[in-house]
Image: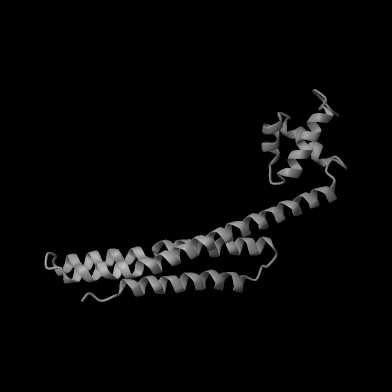
Length: 179
């Protein structure tokens, strides 16, 4: 038997809209957001016809499509950034090699100082690209899962391959001998 104040149709519509737009919201959050007591929210959601199942499913599908589109935009930006970083790394490769050669030719430093400085210069070459590639792989995996491409072997191998290639590349540049 209902007690207390009657909830206006406007407030019910507000709850309905929040449920459609934010299906992940808990009853407590809905209560806090609307000012309607939590037990009332629960009762409202139980009422037959309060939530149109077809509209709700359509709303969820729209949210999923929106997430997939946003994920692809982020993937495209990460690819663009990665490409720029690779181009810059290639452009800077000769300059770094010149610095390493100058360090090795210098008589003002000890062999240990030369080695330490050379290692630091080599580390600058690929570290940021590795981080971007790992983030790119992760974002791609999430986007693929949201799109229904739940092939775990593909997603794991894609990000693992990117990580392996970049790790080998970084280790190779760090192992350059000191002349």
